[in-house]
Length: 363
Image 1 (cartoon, one colour):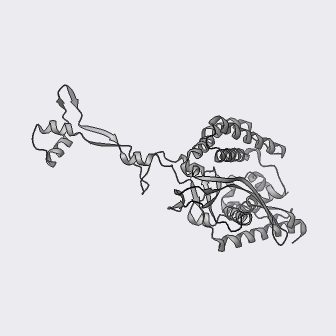
Image 2 (image 1 turned 60 degrees about the vertical axis):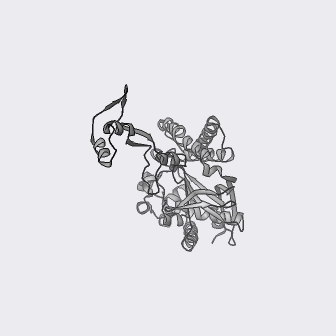
Image 3 (image 1 turned 90 degrees about the vertical axis):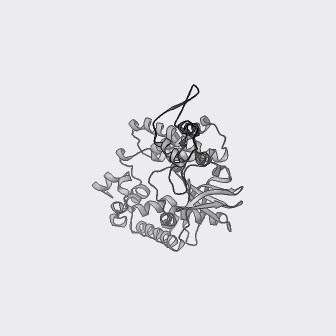
């Protein structure tokens, strides 16, 4: 391995980018090409704004809406300015729509996060925690962990693993990577093989030797799932219950003993009765006690725990680093050193270099 190859820092985003498509890795990390104008969107600046909002409310859950919005807008604008300095271009016609999404979507997620009792039960000791280490071969590993915290009390239903609920005992530590995207792999197997979460786990183990972490994806869109509470089977709990009005049954019976047959007849009847001067409704509605009990609970899973399959993830990380170093050694201009894997992984639909890749991948 050359000294120059060893000096290039390895970042979690680079490893996942290589897995997605080495050709896209070449465009972005090696050649540092400007992305296709038509494909350059606002997902990056919006994500940065969302993370800034998360960092604020984890430290100050009582922060006002105005304060959170101010911080998020500042992060959004700073990211745009930095991108433009690096040669990126952003479609001005989409700017207004992006700002609308920031305020109507990302801001609302962050504010709900601040109110979530699972979040408030954690002392968030570190947010946007930078890390760096060097291995015995001189490779540098660098990145940032979104959030690390410790449970202040027993937290019921903090996370899920697949469909299994995970409770936290007081004193347990959690590591969280916030995600605002729509298309996320949340299966038990997918999370166990997530290289980015594995990379974070390695970083935390080196930064805090001996400390055990529950590593989670914090899926912000879970906070905006159906607002209707659900039962253990996932079926919505009705807000109200309808039942036959006892006063109606009494009026229907007219003083006779009330039997199941009379109740059935009353249920099927469309007649209305008068009791004094007031109409007696056939049916009455009342709030469902089960709905009231469930409505105050958090909506959505929010935290999805990854039980990293190290026997697979660790060799994959090593192999990915090895492939990146071989490609760099063979020469940055060698097209076959950075093969296009997008059609297989589905990365092409999101790739900001797709047009250049189709026409001339490395020229």
